[in-house]
Every structure is written in C-alpha cells, then in structure tokens.
Image (cartoon, rainbow, N blue to C red; front, side, top):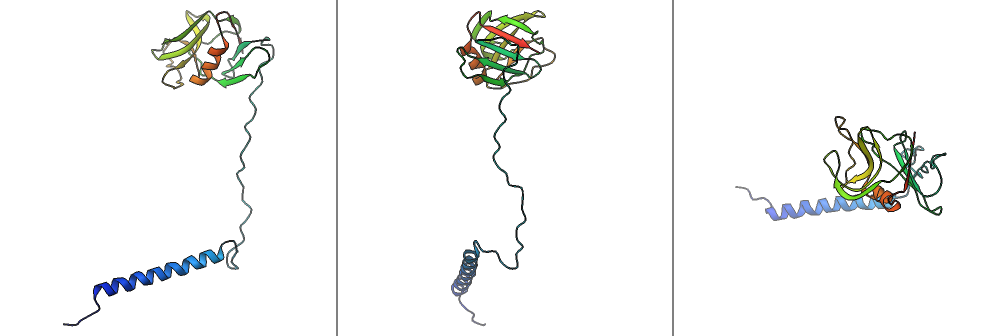
Length: 183
C-alpha cells in the first residue's frame, strides 16, 4: 500500500494555485485597462444611442374655438384640455367607444364622480357631453387603471383615457363647460 499526500495538502495546493492564477489575470486586466493592445483591433465607429427629445405634442386644432374648453379630435384620438387664462394646455390620446361623437360644439350636461359604464366596467370622472345614436358620449377612466379598447359588439360612447388624464378633464370642467369635437 502506497502512501500519498494527505488530502488536505492536495486541496490546499490546488486552492493556492487557483488563487495565484486569478491574481495573475487580475493584474493583467487592471494593467491593460484603458490601453489598446497591439493585437486587438481598433473599435469601429458604432451608432451611439443618444437620448431623444420627444416630439412636442400637436397643437390645439385650428378652428376649435377660444378660451377654456376640451377639444377632442376624432382622427387623432386625442384630447386637449385648454384651461382658462392661457394656462398650459394638456394633451393626451384616448380610446374611443364604438359610437363616435359627431363633430360640433357641445356643453357638459352631466358629471359623475363614479359609476358603471355601459360596458359594465367601473369608472370614475365621467364627463357627459353628447347624446347620439341612442347613447351618451362621455370621457371617463376605468377605476382599475386600464384603458381597454371597447368590445366591438357593444353600443358605447365611452371615450376612455388614463386616470390621470381624465382627471385633467374632470378638473377643467363643470356643467355647461365647452367640448369641441373636430374631425
């Protein structure tokens, strides 16, 4: 029976050797940081991603009136909240219902802080302004925070936006406030 090295000696030797190799690689890596090796190719110019400034939102549509109002564009699916006294205008996209509003000037006829929409979803900040095709057209937000496209089989005039966006409409309207619908 031959006697070899004790196992602890083998483990110690292997561990020490591994640590020495790692130390050599670490020294080489730190020494070459910032230097280009003669063997490594010079990096080619690559596209650099620069933060892009978002495009400004579209302006309030021409011929949509003056003063405090909400402007809703059917083609852009966008609302502009125009506050009184030339304050900053808010604009955002919305999701229209299956029954479109008709172009024209309307006045807010009803405001409901909460309820259930014609699609059965819990809503808040409902601002009603037009009755067409036997249904009300209104801005509202789902209380679950979603902005769902309507079920095409439903007959609804709900114009949905995010809770924050619809709150801007709510805060800028009272009964009788102007809503202008443009193509």
